[in-house]
Image (cartoon, rainbow, N blue to C red):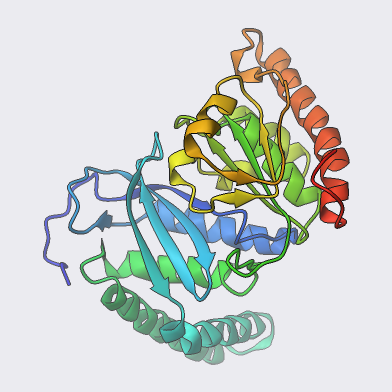
Amino acid sequence: METTARVTDTDRLVTVTLDPNTITSINPDEVHEWRSAIYDLLEDNRFRPARVDATGPFALHMSIIGNSIVLDVRHPTTFQPIAAHYLSLTPFRRLIRDYFRIRDAYYEAIRSAQPFQIETVDMARRGMHNEAAELLRTRLTNKIIIDLNTARRLFTLICAVQPYASRIDERVSELPTVLFVCSMNSVRSPMAAALARQAFPGRVIARSVGVNGGKADQFVHEVMEEAGIDMSVHTPHILDELVATRFDLVVTLSDDAPGALVHKALEAGATEHWDVADPSLVEASRDATLDAYRELRDSLRKRVRARLEPLVSGGSQNP
């Protein structure tokens, strides 16, 4: 393990996002637990991908594929990929069970137990966390360099997302698949995909990409939060990162998207273009700009519901 490697101020995470296709919940308590774990991890960490020539700070995008957590390390502003590693959950099963058992015992002790009982449970909790952190560092040897404190906090985040994740294995799933494509995967396509997942939870696999790489958009976060959708977990992706090659429906949302699809040669049951405005181009006051984003959100919600209803109900891909 490269624990003796030189640590710099740039060897750290500044952004953590979760894949909304594989880590999903509409329960506010569960979402709060994820956000708290992410906040704690970002507050104090030492993190660097091993065996790659990259300068931090870094962004971490997490997803669940089968029985593995995918740790996808990216550039924090462009979200260009740096390194990705699959971490099997099997060696952590007992520790994850212990985490929740001890956590519940700790909360119960705080409510009703004597101080010595609280201390006993707290000691067990610290011991379990240390064991999990050492195992995590071992499993990430020559992959990701982290200190013990970072490993403890990363394990807490893994525990927070793992039990509640709604996992869809796209390799065997028979759910309809939809891909939304826009210029930078910052505004239009991620909003459409998120609205599709909200409208048809567990009934559709909705993904989004951009022709080129973009940045997360704070106005998107704000207006989608108003609709009960957490977009802070969104990481922009580009067409070249797509692993899947077939979709039941592909929807383009920008003028440059149809031409880019030709070169990607995706197989689609149906392809169509939606002519929608890009609110990020609006030059106005903050309130007026937010209204433009809300208008896009509301128009996309109606269109997504109307277009995908026959698809998720087993009908034709054609409108």
